[in-house]
Image 1 (cartoon, one colour):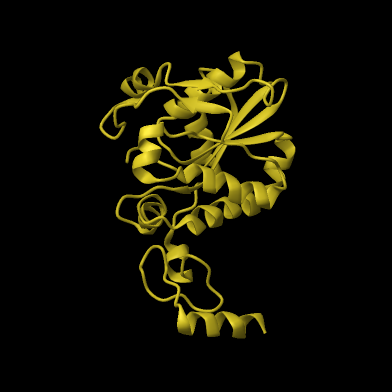
Image 2 (image 1 turned 30 degrees about the horizontal axis):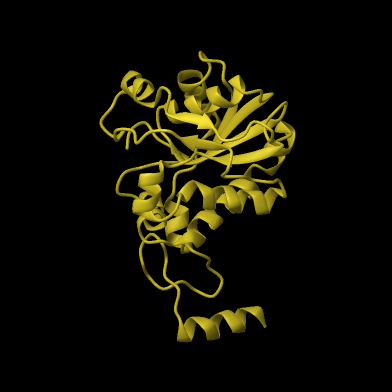
Length: 230
């Protein structure tokens, strides 16, 4: 019955894959099976190496996880582009849900108290209309049944684009970029920071630093994808 209803709905208002833009089948959601199968999964060994390179030395982020590997001009880039620039909020919910489904046991072991999306500056948010990380966090929150809030951290300044910067330059660019709106929600809590793509980890680390300095017990991080360079 459900499949029939979806088929009927698609007849009048067809749904299209966020990556290839072809029409989705009744059993497909947001991304077609062909495109989804092409997205490269982040292997455990790759993630261990990334943690050691991006986070271990600073001792701010206790652990992190990413589901996919970001590859230029591939399906995942098109999917994230559709989320960020085509106002397809359901993509964020879908990606957050996939994170939760794939790493449910890991997140349970981390004993997360609160999920926080990495914030955009108010000018960037006004330009785009929304923060894509908020919808990813919301999808993850629904899957894990853990509260999320976008009202904890604020971005103080409009930072330079990170695309062409190396790791050191990104760290300098992000220094002092965040502050807390309120400390009451994070005191002695284990926090999970969420972003769409982690590259050098500078943004996540700076957010984590503010949380730890304000009384958070532990800070973890998760993203849809990990990337060397965007």
